[in-house]
Length: 589
Image 1 (cartoon, rainbow, N blue to C red):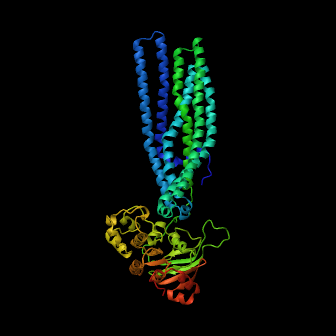
Image 2: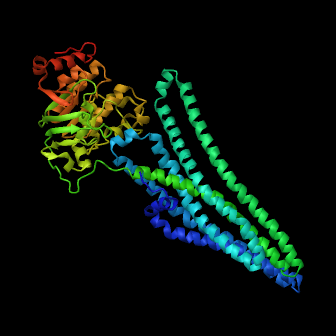
Image 3: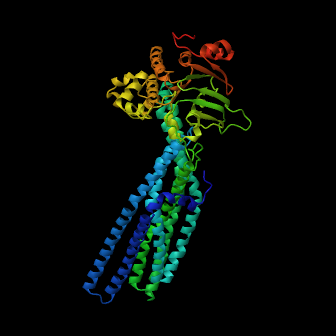
């Protein structure tokens, strides 16, 4: 997270994104100032009009001056339209670029980041915050600059009519600026709190939607609703505080200009009575003050919008400043003809938040998988099996030691290439809101119908042909419209369709019935004769699928051999295997 806290330095952080839009933003500011200048010139015409009528003006003079006022008004409208046209298109491009870069950053950040950050907070940054930044760039920034310039020019015009009236108006307006600067310090904290609370509510909505089956099954819908209501009430309270601060500023913005006008009118009438000021000049003074009313009143709103944008930019860079801990090498190596040899060499792993001096989760793993060999990884819960598999594709990074693919340290390969050689299927099968075809062929180089059919056949996922539109049927979000076993079979088909040199399976068959599992295992044996496989096993049948078994205990491989060998030689292995839950009809050999 950036240590930058000043408003201007934070706002300037979007300069790299907005660089292409700057020329048109400048032109937009120029158009806005020009529109204000035209508006300020109309009182000058009114002064001439009134003064001419009070002396010896003719009807022709009246017509010409009225037409001039109409022309100036029309020009002001055209300049306002020009300002909007100039800024809207490029600023939407800035928003699009920021959103795209944020998404790419999220894809690049390590799994540890996503475990730590609530998804609702990320969602609010990608939608609400970026929309706010767009509105500030296209409206708040342009008008804040233009209105400030307009006020300065307007004050000069007022002084040109009468320095006494101009001084009165200026002195009475000074507290507005003082209040504006004080407003910034209090409003910024409230704005940040509000946006963070909105992110928490987005997280609550997402979790409740994804977990709706659990909430309904346990009758906790009311509890969840009450918890959400408390969060919504907290956000409402924060928004009311924001509104109170803004209302306080508006009180100054509405009361002080009115006071200035009243005092100026009193003084102006006296000056006219004494002959020190013409009636036309007095009318022009108040017409100019009326033109300055909107720029003056808008300062509070524009300051609030600017501070909201500051907070949104901070929240955006909270994510963008996160370090990419797992990166591609500067000069990556390539594997043109992968054989599928996978070797762990003295692999250690510690989670970043582990206390100093505590034992690492993995401590000196040495394991060799020869090409075409399948190895089952077995151990008690929490022994580090899933962590070890995550290291193979660099979802997590080894703390020390190395993992080699065909003799090359996987850190010397680009992550994209590494993940074309190693495919994973997880126990918790995640599918996307897309067609069956798109889900299965997600990581496949061969996207033909034949490749799709082969993968579905191996995973015993023929049920997809009975769906309304077959393989082109769009499954629901996270595949929740399917059963657990159906989701697992599609996830397995996705891993098989990638045709990797190495297949990593984290107990992907746990939700299958015995008969379906037997069919899948039979089909997998044909695949595993050509593909190296590392299989996390939680059931005896999965263990027997592998050529050899690695026993993980206290962060180390303590036994390695065939299932029969380890049953004979390792007490801990017999204990672990006996603790596995066989399905009905399943036999531990």
